[in-house]
Length: 252
Image (cartoon, rainbow, N blue to C red; front, side):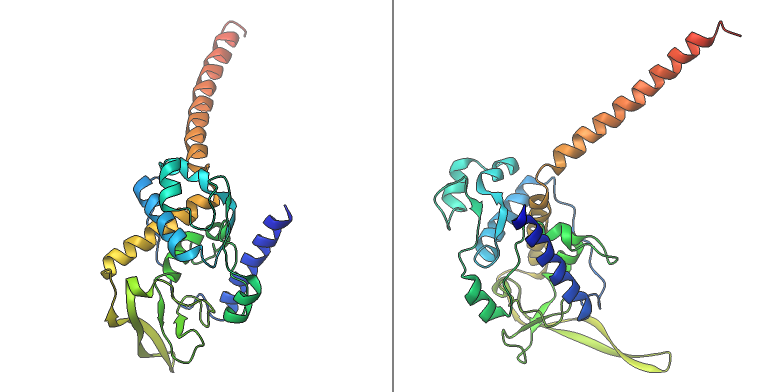
């Protein structure tokens, strides 16, 4: 319980820092709905383990829970088990927290509940993460060499840059209410990545879908059960209404 509370507090703190530094200066893009897409979730799990788990833990998720998205225990062992040899272990990063704080200015937060903690007036937590993972750009003035439009002055480097390539934002100067303002208008590709822009966006949709699912693995079952419960209540209401009418029809 203490770990769960600490994780939530860290997530809230990072979100507050993003807001204070202008993290909502651009509109969030809507994340694709893929939480029911098993191949997308499996690809998202692969991306998470290969690119995120080296620094970020998911301490409230066990590897064997990935069976819920269609992976066998052997597939998990062969393809996703790098930091441990036990499928029942939780997804803990191997990075030293003290070294991480020295390198990035803070310990990378646990990502188990990240998609549930980032919701705001700009959209859902998935929308925030989908936009965040697609708005990194080269910035030589930063210690990591990277910055982010969604979270300005972020301490995290762009770990997926080889997939996306290197880009820089393009701004337009507009006159609004008598004042000149710089408005983001698009991207300039400096060097290509191993994926096309469309492929990268699809991959980030898969990763975000996995983060959504990881925050509540039972959500699909909950929704299915909820639909049947509502149908039962509707049917029971009709039966109760007809029984009530039959009971009172001879009473004046």
